[in-house]
Image 1 (cartoon, rainbow, N blue to C red):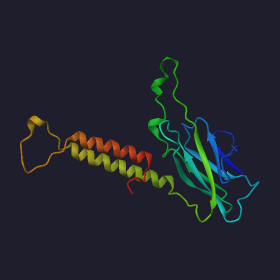
Image 2: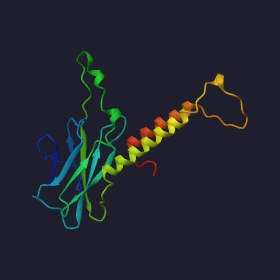
Image 3: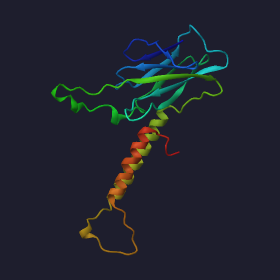
Image 4: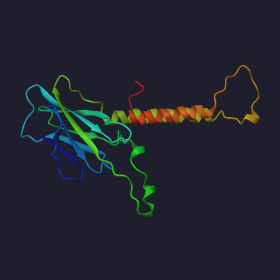
Length: 192
């Protein structure tokens, strides 16, 4: 019923049914994949009033699968292109410096899930371009904030005591920045 295209690879049509309404397929060696296409093969249409919500799961060895909705396909919208590069967790993609002494980087297999649901329950997800522009804006805003804060830094030896001023350690601001950026990479809409 479904097909999956990953650029430069053969079409995948092997979806494993895990329940009456849910199917899953694995994308091997998914580290360098930027886009996928999910489509109806045309052999079997959706039952009347039904559609398929498409999900993506990037492996996390320390947590159960985290299914991220990408969008949907239906009889009226039999194919869709999804951009994955903005939602994959880059810090988990392996370190190429580990290729020393014959050790290669870790290869990740991702999963695509399709949940067959009433068409009234499925919805389009904001386009990755919008998500990327939100991420880019937030990162640029954070960089600007950090540059502004850093422009006021002074060493403790050069500080003039002023009881009317509150001081915040720069390390506290830097920790907040790192945590915010990490959460933004995991879920670009967490701040909403």
